[in-house]
Length: 251
DNA sequence: GCTCATGTTCCCCT
DNA sequence: CAGGGGAACATGAG
Image (tube, rainbow, N blue to C red; front, side, top):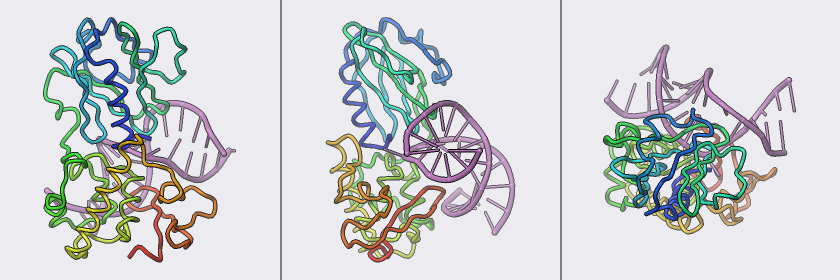
């Protein structure tokens, strides 16, 4: 599930471990520890977790624990005695509880680093929560790719995923296959309004809300229809991902 | 058995 | 260099 709002929810969960000493790190599945050694943070205290795009950055001592959740990751703070989930791969055991990194499909993972985080995350654009209308226009200026492809690109804007991008294009009434270069400034601005709204409305929920008034709440139905006009939604692969849009409203 | 899945990366083209 | 297509990664769920 993890897109920006999901990871923001994991950050809130991680905050329950902030200030606590890490007694030990249990690498239940050590292959998910992609870089660095767990011993570096054992005995250290967690600082305040930060999120950038889909990355969660958790300082501990002089190092950073970098987490990426792939498509099926999540993070839970739980009592030490409570039963673990079968897909809990890495566990940070603290006093009074433990932070459990769960990941069924094992995309993503955890890195422990004392150096610049960009060496691990790669270049990332500004977080989607910090992009105003003017900046949005600048970031997309001169790009020749499609709306779908460009908004999915984490080096342009960080945090948007497949659901959020489809939701954004649907709100803006723009065909996701459209090239940015052929959108008027007015439509670019509409795209920003839509993205900003989707981000803000998703943050409190900790996920893109699967409610009926949103595309996300309608897209997976057998006979999926546009929540606004009732037209049968179109589904196709765009930029390598399953994409859903309303062929009547989105031009 | 088959298809599809909220992500990223790498290789090959244009 | 910018972009697009496709495959790979790992593990289910339906």
